[in-house]
Image (cartoon, rainbow, N blue to C red):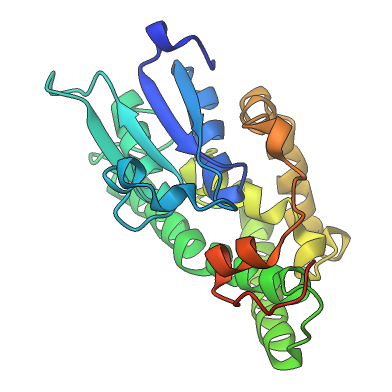
Amino acid sequence: MNTAAGGAMIELHAWPTPNAQKVSIMLEECGLAYTVTAVDINRGDQFDPAFLALSPNNRIPAIIDREPADGGPPLAVFESGAILIYLAEKTQRFLPLPGEPRARKAVLEWLAWQVGGLGPMAGQAHHFRQAMGGVEVPYGIARYSREVRRLYEVMERRLGDSAYLAGDAYSIADIASWPWVRPSRRQGIDKAEFPNVKRWFDAVAARAGVQAGMQLLAEHRGARTMTAESREILFGLGADAPDA
């Protein structure tokens, strides 16, 4: 429900990465009106003082809620997991209420699993397998590829017992995890090896909100050509690193 600025409740500051796609999917699933401001991480926009005022960790995504529940001034939220919880509580969707402690704790457990495990480990696998611009680090490739495979095995076992990560209901745990599973081949994973994960992935992919959310800054997706300057901004590899 991306809309013109005049009717937007939420401002999303993002770049088309899995962590930002979590939030655009959530906004679409919740039917919230929002606008998008591109934060080009390849150019270093994440270090702009205006963005740092929203996200002190200089990482995307961040949101501004123009209509917070307390009726006060606009409220900024950073870190994708915190944003998902904030939006879930704002809309009372995709996260059980505190009065349902067992269901709620399961969602929060699997959300924490994604934020602390699947996302960082898959990101490191992406980095060492593809983003190094021809610099081979066999230990890094092996370490993070093994750990990502272990995490897929965790998902495979879990999804053999339940339809979704936190149980029978679709939740922010699935919204957080799905964009990181989408590029599995970049992690050295063939989803066909994990039939329960594949069944879950396809079910989530079929949702209209997921499809709409994945259009986030689509015009910038695939612009992955990296220069020595952009690698220095993103990874601190230095100007002498080879071009990708």
